[in-house]
Length: 283
Image 1 (cartoon, helix red, strand yellow):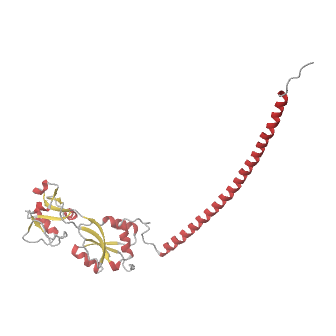
Image 2: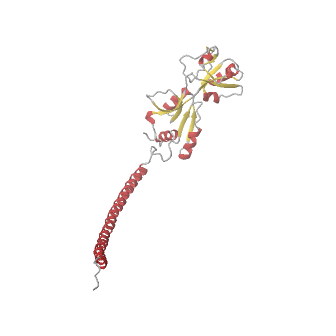
Image 3: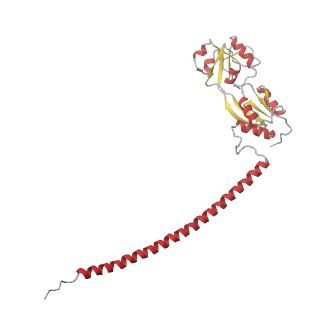
């Protein structure tokens, strides 16, 4: 891990379709003294922004060069086709690629699907950007297949979209240069992964680590000492109580047994003397 003290802020790049607002808000709550700067880049520019240091980390579309960048996959998007609202495709909630076989499917130069072979009929010319392709859809030139987030980003009232169930999908990841895994990058990874402020996997300063280690040993020793005293007191008290009860039981038993034993013969002798002999005859 490298030191990022020379950087006055954390610089986060993101590609179109990604909404980083939630993570930015958590960053500002946890690290109010370190500004987070957002940088919007195209998918093609994202890798360069990380390489040249323009960004400390970036939300990118996979794949990335894993020999240079670390990446944490976050989610995979649904693929949709953007069409005019009165297009025949809108009669269904979902379609397949076969349903596009007779359609002119626009394939912009900044396409992020990564087709092995795009579906449908190719347009006469490839649009330069996805935004340009959306304009051509609105002009009834063709249809456009994109991740759902891009369909929402370029929303128009006269257009709609439907899910393409068997189309390739695009995945979003958090990425950063493997050799530049700074403390601030680690902090942001924790936020994206949903770790709490007190997470055991969060970073601690050396002072916090020493305090935590010493406090833990002190509490452990105290607990052991208390347990030993409590156990000793319990055994001592138990022995005394047990001796008293045992002695009392023996003494009581002896007295009670003696009373019963002594009383039995005396009582029996008296009863036999009184009514046990024959009556004497009068002369």
